Length: 153
Image (cartoon, rainbow, N blue to C red):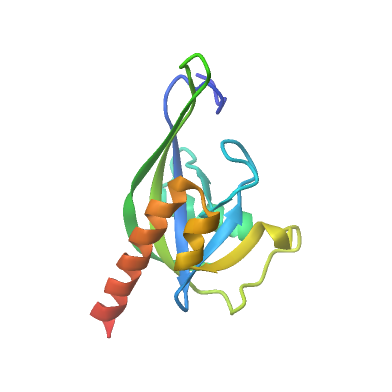
């Protein structure tokens, strides 16, 4: 088995999280392909023995230094990219989650984190800067969080 993300033998399992605070959603710059350098929900690969939610929260801490309380799973999102010959270049299945920010506002970044890797965006602005993979998850997270807020009031 290979850990290669490029031309994988099977889909890669990942988890992401839409962190919501004051009607805004946290976005991070992708550091690895696919779509390196674009804004997306924080997230990454699931480690062996880790639940999807644990992976999402770990990646959130590692990537942007934010602590959050999990609301729940939104939906799986697939990213499949083919090369010019039709071969599968990337195939990632992402378990998208929603969570509420627990860090002080504005969220404090870890010392080794580049400030440019983090941005809070209004839900409407998200569609303009996020990956297509993140857009669906962001919309669902916003609805999910709004519903959870109404139920807890």
